[in-house]
Amino acid sequence: AAGELVDVLERLRRVVAAHPDRLAVVAPDEELSFAELEERVAGVAARLWRAGVRRGSRVGVCLPRSAELPVALLAVWHLGAAFVALDPSYPPRRLHDVAADAGADVVYTTRPDLTCPDLTCPDLTCPERGGPGFVREGRGWPAGVAVVTPSPEVVPTAPQVPRVAVCGLDVAYVLYTSGSTGRPKGVAISRGGVNMLLAGLERAGVFPAEPGRVGWNASVAFDASVQQWIRICRGDTVVLLSDELRADPVALAAFVRDQELTALDVTPSHWAALRALRGSYRSLLLMMGGEPVPAGMWRELAEGDGPPAVNLYGPSECTVDATVGRIEGGASHIGRPLPGVRAYVLDERLRPAEEGELFLA
Image (cartoon, rainbow, N blue to C red):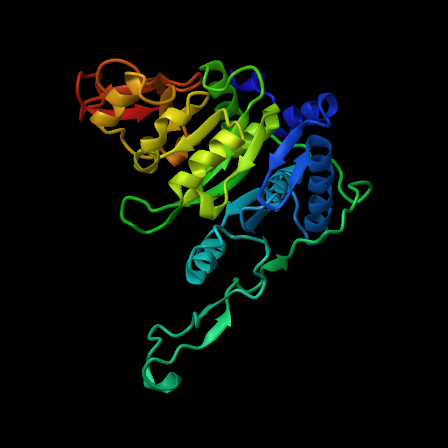
């Protein structure tokens, strides 16, 4: 039951107390133990607190794939706030629009001087604005948003930052999807949803009891990233893949072996580029999601021509995953609901049916 769930940050505190020297984060720029992670999170939380972040605030997080990224996400949660996922590789205008639409109070970023085309003129090439082709550069973050940049300074939490009480209905993050119309739409996910996701994947056997080394492959602005990096909170070591690695199948294969990763999230299309090297992945659990698994790929994985694999399905609104199925035998499928989730196939009159639409609860 949802009432029995332990909040992700409480779980993290227990891990820090029990295993302070265990590696929590391996990033391209540095490594952090759980004790070091806790100290860094406290410092960033204190800076955000001074910038006005409180329970219920929304904080845009726009950082490269470095150790500072999980630190910042956890610091936002430490204050009872919600993060707005901003991938710095996205066009400046999209970053501005997402921050504005989500109602971000603060943006924590390495790009404080983000610029994008003038946001007031509907015709960016009108002669009145300087002639054909003229585009005036302006500040890219919305007016009124406080911009905070990372600092090497570590600031203790007490007395500036008290521990904030949260409930399961508090918003944990806002993530933007393409939407069925192609226009980005924001999905607000609760802390309770995150807690249920973590516990559900454990209870379904997707996350093993023993801590492992998990590859963080997805963009922070893609919902699958949540199920990857929150594994820090259960004691796993999260290994960030650089943008260069994510684009180079040969280098990524070597990285998976060298880092002894035990779990890697990929879309089927990404695995299609990696599977020529499938013999190197025997110690890995492959977590497929984001797209349907093609029949041929399913057969290959089911017949053991690759690592053990699971197929995860769910819309962003249901906190990343709603169902899970082992990729083995027979035809492809999305498996069964995670603990805490119910799934129904209903006809147009909302009656149970052999064929129809999938409803999730």
